[in-house]
Image (cartoon, rainbow, N blue to C red; front, top):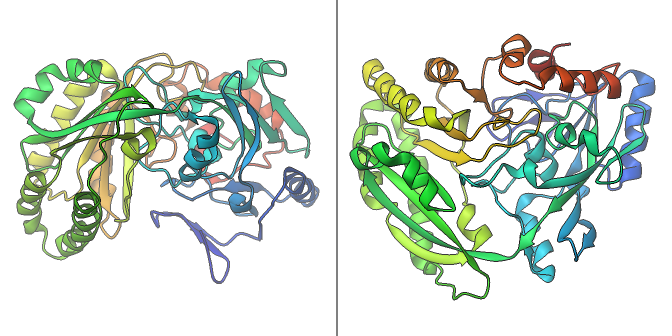
Length: 437
Protein backbone atom coordinates (compact mmCIF):
# COMPACT_ATOMS: atom_id res chain seq x y z
CA UNK A 1 0.00 0.00 0.00
CA UNK A 2 1.06 3.60 -0.57
CA UNK A 3 1.36 5.59 2.64
CA UNK A 4 1.40 9.36 3.24
CA UNK A 5 4.62 10.81 1.93
CA UNK A 6 4.58 8.55 -1.11
CA UNK A 7 6.22 5.52 0.51
CA UNK A 8 4.93 2.15 -0.67
CA UNK A 9 5.31 -0.92 1.55
CA UNK A 10 4.09 -4.46 1.29
CA UNK A 11 1.71 -6.18 3.70
CA UNK A 12 4.48 -8.04 5.52
CA UNK A 13 6.50 -4.84 6.03
CA UNK A 14 9.52 -6.59 4.53
CA UNK A 15 9.80 -4.26 1.50
CA UNK A 16 9.35 -0.53 1.06
CA UNK A 17 10.18 2.04 -1.61
CA UNK A 18 9.48 5.65 -2.49
CA UNK A 19 8.56 5.50 -6.22
CA UNK A 20 9.37 8.41 -8.48
CA UNK A 21 5.74 8.47 -9.61
CA UNK A 22 2.46 6.73 -8.68
CA UNK A 23 -0.56 6.38 -10.96
CA UNK A 24 -3.96 4.73 -10.49
CA UNK A 25 -5.14 3.72 -13.99
CA UNK A 26 -8.85 2.96 -14.36
CA UNK A 27 -8.72 1.63 -17.93
CA UNK A 28 -6.50 -0.47 -20.16
CA UNK A 29 -5.86 2.60 -22.28
CA UNK A 30 -4.64 4.49 -19.22
CA UNK A 31 -2.11 1.73 -18.57
CA UNK A 32 -0.91 1.97 -22.16
CA UNK A 33 -0.48 5.73 -21.92
CA UNK A 34 1.41 5.43 -18.64
CA UNK A 35 3.79 2.76 -19.97
CA UNK A 36 4.41 4.69 -23.20
CA UNK A 37 5.22 7.86 -21.27
CA UNK A 38 7.51 6.02 -18.87
CA UNK A 39 9.33 4.32 -21.74
CA UNK A 40 10.04 7.66 -23.37
CA UNK A 41 11.53 8.88 -20.08
CA UNK A 42 13.49 5.67 -19.50
CA UNK A 43 11.64 5.16 -16.23
CA UNK A 44 11.08 1.54 -15.13
CA UNK A 45 7.46 0.49 -14.52
CA UNK A 46 5.91 -1.98 -12.08
CA UNK A 47 2.28 -2.79 -11.39
CA UNK A 48 1.14 -3.63 -7.87
CA UNK A 49 -2.04 -5.15 -6.51
CA UNK A 50 -2.47 -5.90 -2.83
CA UNK A 51 1.24 -5.96 -1.98
CA UNK A 52 0.87 -9.37 -0.39
CA UNK A 53 4.19 -10.73 -1.66
CA UNK A 54 6.95 -10.91 0.93
CA UNK A 55 9.69 -10.58 -1.71
CA UNK A 56 10.51 -7.44 -3.66
CA UNK A 57 8.77 -8.71 -6.79
CA UNK A 58 6.39 -5.72 -6.90
CA UNK A 59 8.83 -3.03 -5.72
CA UNK A 60 8.64 -0.05 -8.11
CA UNK A 61 11.59 2.34 -7.99
CA UNK A 62 10.30 4.28 -11.02
CA UNK A 63 6.62 4.39 -11.98
CA UNK A 64 4.27 2.46 -9.71
CA UNK A 65 0.97 1.52 -11.34
CA UNK A 66 -1.52 0.79 -8.57
CA UNK A 67 -4.23 -1.39 -10.13
CA UNK A 68 -6.78 -0.84 -7.34
CA UNK A 69 -9.22 0.83 -9.74
CA UNK A 70 -8.74 -1.59 -12.64
CA UNK A 71 -11.33 -4.12 -11.49
CA UNK A 72 -14.43 -6.01 -12.60
CA UNK A 73 -15.66 -8.31 -15.33
CA UNK A 74 -14.79 -7.63 -18.95
CA UNK A 75 -16.56 -10.56 -20.61
CA UNK A 76 -18.28 -13.86 -19.81
CA UNK A 77 -18.35 -16.84 -22.17
CA UNK A 78 -21.24 -18.80 -20.67
CA UNK A 79 -20.88 -21.77 -23.01
CA UNK A 80 -17.24 -22.39 -22.16
CA UNK A 81 -17.50 -21.11 -18.56
CA UNK A 82 -14.75 -18.60 -19.15
CA UNK A 83 -14.63 -15.22 -17.45
CA UNK A 84 -12.33 -12.32 -18.30
CA UNK A 85 -11.43 -10.02 -15.40
CA UNK A 86 -9.56 -6.75 -15.22
CA UNK A 87 -6.18 -7.44 -13.69
CA UNK A 88 -6.60 -5.48 -10.48
CA UNK A 89 -9.67 -7.45 -9.37
CA UNK A 90 -9.10 -8.85 -5.89
CA UNK A 91 -9.70 -12.54 -5.30
CA UNK A 92 -12.20 -11.80 -2.54
CA UNK A 93 -14.29 -9.84 -5.08
CA UNK A 94 -14.45 -12.71 -7.56
CA UNK A 95 -17.12 -14.90 -5.88
CA UNK A 96 -19.76 -12.15 -6.05
CA UNK A 97 -18.82 -11.41 -9.66
CA UNK A 98 -19.16 -15.07 -10.68
CA UNK A 99 -22.30 -15.84 -8.65
CA UNK A 100 -24.83 -14.50 -11.20
CA UNK A 101 -23.42 -16.97 -13.72
CA UNK A 102 -23.39 -19.97 -11.36
CA UNK A 103 -19.61 -20.22 -11.61
CA UNK A 104 -16.64 -20.46 -9.27
CA UNK A 105 -12.86 -20.63 -9.47
CA UNK A 106 -11.65 -24.23 -9.43
CA UNK A 107 -9.25 -23.69 -6.53
CA UNK A 108 -8.04 -20.87 -4.29
CA UNK A 109 -5.30 -20.22 -1.79
CA UNK A 110 -6.08 -19.73 1.86
CA UNK A 111 -5.80 -15.93 1.59
CA UNK A 112 -7.95 -13.97 -0.88
CA UNK A 113 -6.66 -10.41 -0.47
CA UNK A 114 -4.44 -10.56 -3.58
CA UNK A 115 -5.29 -9.21 -7.00
CA UNK A 116 -5.84 -11.81 -9.70
CA UNK A 117 -2.81 -10.55 -11.65
CA UNK A 118 -0.58 -10.60 -8.57
CA UNK A 119 -1.77 -14.06 -7.56
CA UNK A 120 -1.02 -15.68 -10.90
CA UNK A 121 2.20 -13.74 -11.48
CA UNK A 122 3.75 -15.03 -8.25
CA UNK A 123 2.47 -18.60 -8.46
CA UNK A 124 -0.10 -18.41 -5.66
CA UNK A 125 -1.67 -21.82 -5.08
CA UNK A 126 -4.13 -23.64 -2.89
CA UNK A 127 -4.04 -27.30 -2.01
CA UNK A 128 -5.27 -30.48 -3.64
CA UNK A 129 -3.19 -33.25 -5.17
CA UNK A 130 -5.41 -33.23 -8.27
CA UNK A 131 -5.45 -29.45 -8.76
CA UNK A 132 -2.89 -26.93 -9.95
CA UNK A 133 -2.15 -23.44 -8.73
CA UNK A 134 -4.30 -20.44 -9.62
CA UNK A 135 -2.24 -19.72 -12.75
CA UNK A 136 -3.26 -23.10 -14.22
CA UNK A 137 -6.82 -21.74 -14.46
CA UNK A 138 -5.65 -19.01 -16.86
CA UNK A 139 -6.68 -19.62 -20.48
CA UNK A 140 -6.03 -16.13 -21.82
CA UNK A 141 -4.54 -12.76 -20.98
CA UNK A 142 -3.80 -9.32 -22.33
CA UNK A 143 -0.74 -7.37 -21.33
CA UNK A 144 0.80 -4.05 -22.17
CA UNK A 145 4.32 -4.46 -23.55
CA UNK A 146 7.22 -2.10 -23.04
CA UNK A 147 6.30 -0.47 -26.36
CA UNK A 148 2.85 0.37 -24.98
CA UNK A 149 1.19 -2.17 -27.27
CA UNK A 150 -1.45 -4.72 -26.30
CA UNK A 151 -0.39 -8.35 -26.55
CA UNK A 152 -3.29 -10.81 -26.58
CA UNK A 153 -2.70 -14.41 -25.56
CA UNK A 154 -5.59 -16.79 -26.20
CA UNK A 155 -6.56 -19.97 -28.03
CA UNK A 156 -6.49 -18.00 -31.28
CA UNK A 157 -3.61 -15.58 -30.71
CA UNK A 158 -0.12 -16.30 -29.42
CA UNK A 159 -1.31 -19.50 -27.77
CA UNK A 160 2.28 -20.74 -27.48
CA UNK A 161 3.03 -17.93 -25.03
CA UNK A 162 0.38 -18.90 -22.48
CA UNK A 163 2.66 -21.16 -20.37
CA UNK A 164 4.95 -18.16 -19.86
CA UNK A 165 2.43 -15.32 -19.61
CA UNK A 166 0.11 -17.11 -17.16
CA UNK A 167 2.89 -17.01 -14.56
CA UNK A 168 5.08 -14.19 -15.79
CA UNK A 169 6.55 -12.72 -12.57
CA UNK A 170 5.67 -9.25 -13.83
CA UNK A 171 8.70 -9.47 -16.11
CA UNK A 172 7.00 -9.64 -19.50
CA UNK A 173 4.62 -6.70 -19.36
CA UNK A 174 1.75 -5.21 -17.38
CA UNK A 175 -1.19 -7.62 -17.17
CA UNK A 176 -4.45 -5.77 -17.78
CA UNK A 177 -6.90 -8.63 -18.39
CA UNK A 178 -6.95 -12.25 -17.25
CA UNK A 179 -9.30 -14.95 -18.62
CA UNK A 180 -10.06 -17.81 -16.23
CA UNK A 181 -11.46 -21.24 -16.93
CA UNK A 182 -14.17 -21.48 -14.28
CA UNK A 183 -16.29 -24.41 -13.08
CA UNK A 184 -19.89 -24.70 -11.91
CA UNK A 185 -20.27 -23.33 -8.40
CA UNK A 186 -19.78 -26.03 -5.78
CA UNK A 187 -19.79 -26.71 -2.06
CA UNK A 188 -17.08 -28.22 0.10
CA UNK A 189 -17.58 -30.59 3.00
CA UNK A 190 -14.76 -29.84 5.44
CA UNK A 191 -13.48 -32.02 8.24
CA UNK A 192 -10.90 -30.41 10.48
CA UNK A 193 -9.33 -32.45 13.25
CA UNK A 194 -6.08 -32.89 15.14
CA UNK A 195 -4.16 -36.06 14.27
CA UNK A 196 -1.07 -37.36 16.04
CA UNK A 197 2.00 -37.01 13.82
CA UNK A 198 2.77 -40.67 14.43
CA UNK A 199 -0.49 -41.49 12.67
CA UNK A 200 -0.43 -38.73 10.04
CA UNK A 201 3.09 -38.83 8.65
CA UNK A 202 3.46 -42.52 7.76
CA UNK A 203 0.35 -42.30 5.55
CA UNK A 204 0.69 -38.73 4.31
CA UNK A 205 0.26 -39.71 0.65
CA UNK A 206 -2.97 -41.51 1.51
CA UNK A 207 -4.32 -38.48 3.35
CA UNK A 208 -3.56 -36.23 0.37
CA UNK A 209 -5.13 -38.67 -2.10
CA UNK A 210 -8.27 -39.34 -0.08
CA UNK A 211 -9.57 -35.75 -0.25
CA UNK A 212 -10.04 -33.21 -2.98
CA UNK A 213 -8.20 -30.63 -0.90
CA UNK A 214 -5.96 -31.65 2.00
CA UNK A 215 -3.57 -29.69 4.17
CA UNK A 216 -2.25 -29.68 7.69
CA UNK A 217 -0.68 -27.25 10.11
CA UNK A 218 1.90 -28.14 12.70
CA UNK A 219 2.65 -25.94 15.68
CA UNK A 220 6.29 -26.48 16.62
CA UNK A 221 6.72 -27.91 20.13
CA UNK A 222 3.67 -30.15 19.68
CA UNK A 223 3.21 -33.70 18.39
CA UNK A 224 -0.05 -33.10 16.51
CA UNK A 225 -0.97 -32.04 12.98
CA UNK A 226 -4.11 -29.96 12.56
CA UNK A 227 -5.58 -31.54 9.42
CA UNK A 228 -8.16 -30.13 7.05
CA UNK A 229 -9.76 -32.45 4.46
CA UNK A 230 -12.30 -31.05 1.98
CA UNK A 231 -14.53 -32.95 -0.44
CA UNK A 232 -16.31 -31.25 -3.33
CA UNK A 233 -20.12 -31.43 -3.55
CA UNK A 234 -22.67 -30.06 -6.06
CA UNK A 235 -23.99 -26.61 -5.23
CA UNK A 236 -27.45 -28.16 -4.90
CA UNK A 237 -26.41 -30.12 -1.81
CA UNK A 238 -27.44 -28.89 1.61
CA UNK A 239 -25.16 -26.39 3.32
CA UNK A 240 -24.26 -26.82 6.98
CA UNK A 241 -22.12 -23.74 7.61
CA UNK A 242 -20.35 -23.06 10.86
CA UNK A 243 -22.54 -21.36 13.47
CA UNK A 244 -21.82 -17.62 13.40
CA UNK A 245 -20.81 -17.44 17.06
CA UNK A 246 -18.55 -20.49 16.88
CA UNK A 247 -16.92 -19.23 13.70
CA UNK A 248 -16.26 -15.85 15.32
CA UNK A 249 -14.71 -17.48 18.37
CA UNK A 250 -12.45 -19.76 16.30
CA UNK A 251 -11.40 -17.42 13.51
CA UNK A 252 -11.63 -13.91 14.94
CA UNK A 253 -11.16 -14.19 18.69
CA UNK A 254 -8.74 -17.13 18.90
CA UNK A 255 -6.99 -17.34 15.49
CA UNK A 256 -6.46 -13.59 15.17
CA UNK A 257 -7.17 -11.67 18.38
CA UNK A 258 -5.69 -13.90 21.08
CA UNK A 259 -3.01 -15.15 18.71
CA UNK A 260 -1.83 -11.60 17.98
CA UNK A 261 -1.42 -10.94 21.70
CA UNK A 262 0.44 -14.22 22.17
CA UNK A 263 2.84 -13.51 19.29
CA UNK A 264 3.56 -10.07 20.65
CA UNK A 265 4.23 -11.45 24.12
CA UNK A 266 6.45 -14.19 22.71
CA UNK A 267 8.82 -11.63 21.22
CA UNK A 268 9.51 -10.46 24.78
CA UNK A 269 9.24 -13.79 26.61
CA UNK A 270 10.00 -16.59 24.10
CA UNK A 271 9.71 -19.35 26.70
CA UNK A 272 5.89 -19.03 26.68
CA UNK A 273 5.70 -20.28 23.07
CA UNK A 274 5.61 -24.06 23.67
CA UNK A 275 2.85 -23.78 26.28
CA UNK A 276 0.80 -21.49 24.06
CA UNK A 277 1.25 -23.77 21.05
CA UNK A 278 0.01 -26.78 22.99
CA UNK A 279 -2.99 -24.75 24.18
CA UNK A 280 -3.72 -23.60 20.60
CA UNK A 281 -3.82 -27.20 19.41
CA UNK A 282 -6.34 -28.08 22.11
CA UNK A 283 -8.62 -25.09 21.40
CA UNK A 284 -8.72 -25.15 17.58
CA UNK A 285 -8.86 -27.49 14.61
CA UNK A 286 -11.76 -29.81 15.48
CA UNK A 287 -14.91 -29.08 13.48
CA UNK A 288 -17.02 -30.26 10.52
CA UNK A 289 -19.13 -28.18 8.14
CA UNK A 290 -20.36 -27.75 4.56
CA UNK A 291 -20.36 -24.41 2.79
CA UNK A 292 -19.64 -22.61 -0.48
CA UNK A 293 -16.19 -23.36 -1.83
CA UNK A 294 -14.81 -19.87 -1.28
CA UNK A 295 -15.90 -19.82 2.35
CA UNK A 296 -14.13 -23.11 3.03
CA UNK A 297 -10.93 -22.58 1.03
CA UNK A 298 -10.13 -19.08 2.30
CA UNK A 299 -9.78 -17.56 5.73
CA UNK A 300 -9.10 -14.21 7.33
CA UNK A 301 -5.59 -13.61 8.62
CA UNK A 302 -4.99 -10.32 10.36
CA UNK A 303 -1.90 -11.23 12.38
CA UNK A 304 0.99 -9.82 10.35
CA UNK A 305 3.81 -12.21 9.52
CA UNK A 306 6.61 -12.96 7.09
CA UNK A 307 6.80 -16.18 5.16
CA UNK A 308 9.05 -18.50 3.21
CA UNK A 309 7.60 -21.40 1.23
CA UNK A 310 9.23 -24.09 -0.87
CA UNK A 311 7.73 -26.59 -3.29
CA UNK A 312 9.40 -30.01 -3.13
CA UNK A 313 8.61 -33.16 -5.10
CA UNK A 314 5.60 -34.77 -3.40
CA UNK A 315 7.64 -37.82 -2.39
CA UNK A 316 10.07 -35.55 -0.49
CA UNK A 317 7.50 -33.87 1.75
CA UNK A 318 7.82 -36.35 4.61
CA UNK A 319 11.66 -36.36 4.83
CA UNK A 320 11.82 -32.57 4.45
CA UNK A 321 9.21 -32.08 7.15
CA UNK A 322 11.00 -34.51 9.48
CA UNK A 323 14.27 -32.64 8.94
CA UNK A 324 12.50 -29.36 9.74
CA UNK A 325 11.17 -30.75 13.02
CA UNK A 326 14.63 -32.01 13.97
CA UNK A 327 16.16 -28.63 13.10
CA UNK A 328 13.83 -26.72 15.43
CA UNK A 329 14.48 -29.16 18.28
CA UNK A 330 18.25 -29.08 17.83
CA UNK A 331 18.47 -25.30 17.63
CA UNK A 332 16.17 -24.76 20.58
CA UNK A 333 14.19 -22.10 18.75
CA UNK A 334 10.81 -21.01 20.09
CA UNK A 335 8.65 -20.74 16.95
CA UNK A 336 5.16 -19.32 17.54
CA UNK A 337 3.80 -19.64 13.98
CA UNK A 338 2.70 -23.01 12.61
CA UNK A 339 4.28 -24.78 9.65
CA UNK A 340 1.81 -25.27 6.78
CA UNK A 341 1.90 -28.26 4.41
CA UNK A 342 -0.14 -28.38 1.18
CA UNK A 343 -0.15 -30.26 -2.14
CA UNK A 344 -0.58 -29.56 -5.86
CA UNK A 345 -0.67 -31.41 -9.17
CA UNK A 346 2.08 -31.10 -11.76
CA UNK A 347 1.61 -28.48 -14.47
CA UNK A 348 3.36 -27.23 -17.62
CA UNK A 349 3.76 -23.52 -16.81
CA UNK A 350 7.35 -22.55 -17.43
CA UNK A 351 8.03 -20.79 -14.12
CA UNK A 352 5.62 -22.71 -11.93
CA UNK A 353 6.99 -24.27 -8.77
CA UNK A 354 5.02 -27.40 -9.74
CA UNK A 355 6.37 -27.51 -13.31
CA UNK A 356 6.64 -31.13 -14.40
CA UNK A 357 6.13 -32.72 -11.00
CA UNK A 358 3.50 -33.36 -8.36
CA UNK A 359 4.48 -31.13 -5.48
CA UNK A 360 4.14 -30.57 -1.79
CA UNK A 361 4.50 -27.10 -0.27
CA UNK A 362 6.10 -26.48 3.10
CA UNK A 363 5.66 -22.95 4.43
CA UNK A 364 7.32 -21.43 7.49
CA UNK A 365 6.43 -18.12 9.10
CA UNK A 366 7.66 -15.67 11.69
CA UNK A 367 5.75 -12.90 13.43
CA UNK A 368 6.58 -9.67 11.60
CA UNK A 369 8.35 -8.12 14.58
CA UNK A 370 10.77 -11.09 14.80
CA UNK A 371 13.87 -11.46 12.64
CA UNK A 372 13.24 -14.53 10.42
CA UNK A 373 16.74 -14.71 8.91
CA UNK A 374 18.35 -17.52 10.91
CA UNK A 375 15.25 -19.72 10.87
CA UNK A 376 14.45 -19.17 7.20
CA UNK A 377 17.98 -19.73 5.96
CA UNK A 378 18.34 -22.99 7.88
CA UNK A 379 14.97 -24.23 6.60
CA UNK A 380 15.90 -23.15 3.09
CA UNK A 381 18.97 -25.39 3.18
CA UNK A 382 16.72 -28.36 3.95
CA UNK A 383 14.33 -27.50 1.15
CA UNK A 384 17.10 -27.05 -1.40
CA UNK A 385 18.56 -30.42 -0.47
CA UNK A 386 15.06 -31.85 -1.04
CA UNK A 387 14.84 -30.51 -4.60
CA UNK A 388 12.85 -27.43 -3.59
CA UNK A 389 11.79 -24.44 -5.64
CA UNK A 390 10.96 -21.21 -3.77
CA UNK A 391 7.58 -19.51 -4.03
CA UNK A 392 8.20 -16.36 -6.09
CA UNK A 393 6.24 -14.15 -3.71
CA UNK A 394 7.80 -15.42 -0.49
CA UNK A 395 11.19 -14.86 1.04
CA UNK A 396 14.20 -16.79 -0.26
CA UNK A 397 17.84 -16.19 -1.19
CA UNK A 398 18.20 -17.84 -4.60
CA UNK A 399 19.53 -16.08 -7.68
CA UNK A 400 19.29 -16.72 -11.42
CA UNK A 401 22.18 -19.20 -11.49
CA UNK A 402 20.60 -21.38 -8.82
CA UNK A 403 17.09 -21.11 -10.25
CA UNK A 404 18.16 -21.99 -13.79
CA UNK A 405 19.14 -25.43 -12.53
CA UNK A 406 15.67 -25.97 -11.05
CA UNK A 407 13.52 -24.85 -14.00
CA UNK A 408 13.80 -26.73 -17.33
CA UNK A 409 12.23 -23.81 -19.24
CA UNK A 410 14.16 -21.04 -17.48
CA UNK A 411 16.15 -20.05 -20.57
CA UNK A 412 13.00 -20.07 -22.72
CA UNK A 413 11.39 -17.66 -20.28
CA UNK A 414 14.33 -15.27 -20.19
CA UNK A 415 14.54 -15.38 -24.01
CA UNK A 416 10.88 -14.30 -24.17
CA UNK A 417 11.65 -11.55 -21.69
CA UNK A 418 14.48 -10.38 -23.94
CA UNK A 419 12.04 -10.26 -26.84
CA UNK A 420 9.18 -8.45 -25.06
CA UNK A 421 11.22 -6.17 -22.81
CA UNK A 422 14.69 -5.76 -24.32
CA UNK A 423 15.35 -2.51 -22.44
CA UNK A 424 14.16 -3.94 -19.09
CA UNK A 425 11.37 -1.42 -18.51
CA UNK A 426 9.74 -3.86 -16.08
CA UNK A 427 12.87 -4.65 -14.07
CA UNK A 428 13.55 -4.17 -10.39
CA UNK A 429 16.21 -5.49 -8.03
CA UNK A 430 14.31 -8.70 -7.30
CA UNK A 431 13.86 -9.61 -10.97
CA UNK A 432 17.50 -8.77 -11.64
CA UNK A 433 18.43 -11.29 -8.96
CA UNK A 434 16.12 -14.16 -9.90
CA UNK A 435 16.19 -13.77 -13.70
CA UNK A 436 19.45 -11.96 -14.32
CA UNK A 437 19.91 -8.48 -15.71
